[in-house]
Image (tube, rainbow, N blue to C red):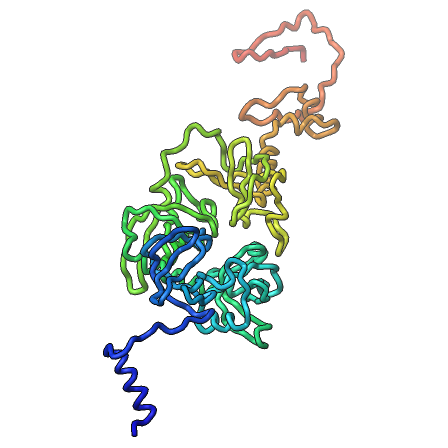
Length: 436
């Protein structure tokens, strides 16, 4: 008699050797599959997933990422039709409901879920996963450190389910883990394509004393302070800000024990100094209005051009939202911090206006003419001017000292005797000779 376990083993061997027809396993909702794009038509992306029917994904899911025939995809089964599964790149996309069962699939298979950030709460974000409420801790929102969670409210983002409690009533999600995985895949692609002389675009990740670190989408590059601008730069923050997107030239790529050392330059791509721009000086105070908001600050329009005011250069109360404090159209005064010698790009500050005005007033006080300080009635200057007969002291010299001798007293005239002639000495001094 053949044991049931032996029979099952023999059956598997028979299938693998071609003794029987092996059918593809039945797909279930929430299951992850891999396939190749074989056609794009009728608003659908057709994917060969190795089953009886081809999978179909709505083309709208690729608006922000792009797709073409031949691409390898990893998707999730939304509806397992017998004629071919309906797939999605992230659960919840297209408004489809997310149940406790699909959430469990997402947790086990690390399937992305799409959700809309509904509110910023203490410690993180509240996320609506197509009808299911979830929480994303602030430490799991992004790869970098997040200080203002309000900027994510209203955005539709993709997350990864990392914990499910109380039968699906308490769901914890993470965007950071998903971004880190994407960055790792992008880094592997970049390693073989980035070379000296290439032009790359990235986001300023941080600024340090000697330059700026730029995130190239999985790999970090470094711009030395001497490569930030054609003009002299005192601080990297005067040229670039964290979160700002920049286009750089790759100066060199070196392999080290820690990975790739990518040297970048902004200066290499800047044009010759701009001469047709209105003249503007550093520490010049200008009046302007808020033209628009950017992730790292506000753009202010002035008579001498537009410039960026980074959030660190704004006068903000702790925890205040710079978009609400400085709405579009808001009138304000700014001081010029720097102007790029090649692009002519201006950098402004709101917080330094008072300091610059104070310095300018101090200099103007010392440049006032001397007459202004002696024009008051009863002042020492007025008394001296009256004493000296309204004469100013000679240039480079001291004023004449007032005489301390007593005024001469007029004596009665005495007629000289006729016989007492006046003689003169050799030195010209008159000598009176009289009788004894």
